[in-house]
Length: 299
Ligand SMILES: C[S@@+](CC[C@H](N)C(=O)[O-])C[C@H]1O[C@@H](n2cnc3c(N)ncnc32)[C@H](O)[C@@H]1O
Image 1 (cartoon, rainbow, N blue to C red):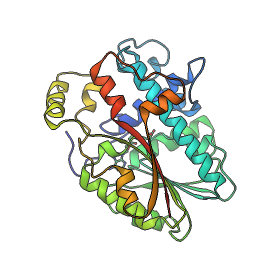
Image 2 (cartoon, rainbow, N blue to C red):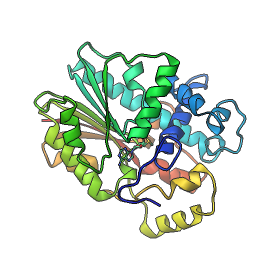
Image 3 (cartoon, helix red, strand yellow):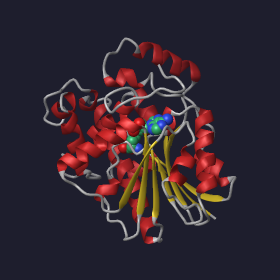
Image 4 (cartoon, protein in one colour):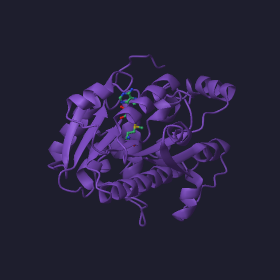
């Protein structure tokens, strides 16, 4: 279970979720017609080894990412979300934004694999051991960032805006923010603090992209958490890491503060890129239907 000041590395607690989504991206890249290709995802999985390498080599048939009911849909979901946010960053770069903030960067490799304009600085915020793993894995692979990359080892429930400013972030200049795969790991109070921090630091003309999920019915969620305690794998543990809370839909929260937001449901996005969101499994269908991708510009 979570506590207000819990910490983790890349293979434990919330840290392992970064590895889980990286493994999904690596599996997508193996498909003949992938929605998105993140070559670093495989690098990270192989750096950890064990089940994370085995799942890529077809040697972990029981891994949740290989299950027909959950795994194949989750891999497509991650690929769609990578594609959506990659396109977002290409647009903000074309719009002239040169400060990029990856909130809960995890194993996001965009600082290494996207074409950034000269003069771009990418701030990556996450817990210290997650950033340390990523730095060492990428260094061992021999890759260099395609923009100036600054790590900010901080907990996003603490005073991260001060840490960002201390690293050189200029709030008078436009910025582009992302919260991908983050909000479910924060209680509503920390989501409010996060949104307030973004709004305070983003100048007019700044951009934001968010992935969010609609919370489940409270009793259904509690039942899931109890049931998951008896499931020993990553998927079972995951239910004990998330907060089933939402301070407000991001489009509404930021819309009330002068931002213009556009929401796309994951289901619509999947249809638009020619992928099915149909699942015979009610839990998986509900998961897919609960996700919204949001982008916003501060007016
Ligand atoms: C599912 S991963 C997503 C990583 C990345 N954004 C991506 O989509 O690949 C969740 C990430 O959120 C980070 N995270 C969650 N809560 C956090 C907190 N309170 N402070 C810092 N990082 C946090 C974890 O360390 C992990 O890297």
